[in-house]
Amino acid sequence: MKLRSKITVLTTTIVISVVFFTLLPIRSVIIDAFRKELEKKAVSISRNLSDRIANHILLKDHFQTATAIDEVLGKEKEIEYIFVTNENGVIFEHTFSDNLPADILSWNPVAGQEMNVQLLETEKGYIRDIGVRILKGTQSVLHLGIREDSLRNTLTQIRYMTVPVIIVVLLIGIAASFILSRFITEPLNKFVEFTKVLGRGEFGGRVDVQYGDEIGYLARNFNRLSMQLRSTKEKMEEAYTYTHLLEAEKLSSIGQISAGLAHELKNPLTTLKMLFQAYKEQPDMTKEDAEVISNEIEKIDNVLTNFMSFVKQKGFHLSETNMNELIDRILSLATYYIEKSRIHVRKDMLESLPVIKADGALLEQVFLNLVINAIHAMPDGGEIRISGKSDDISVEIMFQDEGGGIPPDIQAKIFNPFFTTKEEGTGLGLAIAYNIVNSHGGKLFFNSEEGKGTIFTVRLPIEGEHG
Image (cartoon, rainbow, N blue to C red; front, side):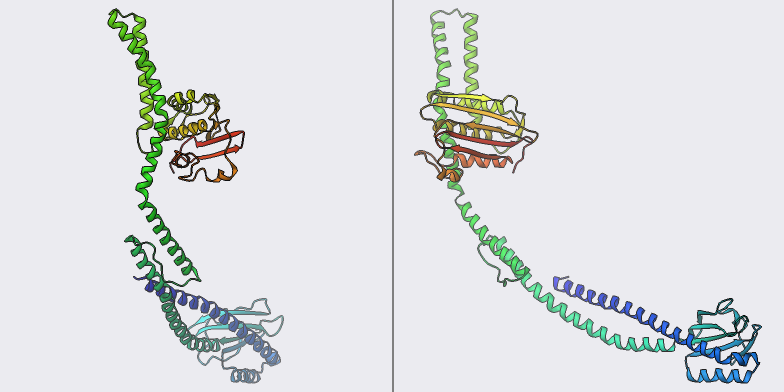
């Protein structure tokens, strides 16, 4: 079923329900009101008639009693019957044309009351029997039965009036629902066609729907989405160049630690060369020489392992990561560079940090970038303090240098891609670091004061998040 048909059916159902549940209470109120008025009328007639015939019953005057009853019957067409009893409770006069019903006195017993009203269900419909005591202290009672003819006539008139009204309202409701569904479904059809256009990758178009209501608000958002998709598509077309620039940033970091790698490898290789030269001249090798050779080879293996773990590309992978060990690997990679720049590194409280779930290789790139930036900030040497703290939710690693600080006018730009103050920089280092930390569900921020240095803080969740 199409949306227009659904709206029409729903609206029609609502109209019918409203009409039905509105008329039903009204009908009930009208019936109750008529019955109350009918009862008041019957009670009034009964009391008047009982007062009028009281003396006739005492005098046992059947003629006057019958005359008074006939006068009432002549005026009130809704009265079904009247009968009275004498002071002994015996039927004195009645209006039944056929034989007197055998159980008539049990229909509405007045007993010790002055008056009693009983609703009787008969073959002719509901009849209200009004029983009124005529003579106090006796069993003389007047019973008057009144039909609900006027009520039935009124309900019939109401039915004749309401049925056309219901039909007219129903027709109006159907017409209104059809028009309403058209106003709603036509813009929706445009949205459907527009989604097909977007599905084909044709971004930048617009939905031709007037603004001003909820549908217009939706159209405005669709148009904004279309423009954003076009902008994203244009950026994706530049992804190839951007990807190569990211690779260039990593190669730049590798290049900066290459000198340190060469230095770290040269020392053990020189020792090995000297030992093997001595071995050529003197074939005997002592246990101490063998142990030195083993230690130097292990040193070379550790340096190459650390370097390859940084260079190797891999996807985002969470694993148990020890922050202290990770910092040690980074400092090992940058040892030569740190010594060459006359930098002293001080570590505080890193051993007490908990193991977290993170991508260690990506965090190595972040920390190495922050260490290299700290070294660049102190061309005349100084101290880098790496400290840490944690709570039940996260850990924080702080990198503090004693450089000249970051000028206030560029502090808001340092995380922007391609922004750099270095002559040979890509301007992607901090941007990449920021994105890596953010992808872990963490935060990278800094505090800097000109002339006193900068503190970069990496806050990471302990459980790890891949955003």
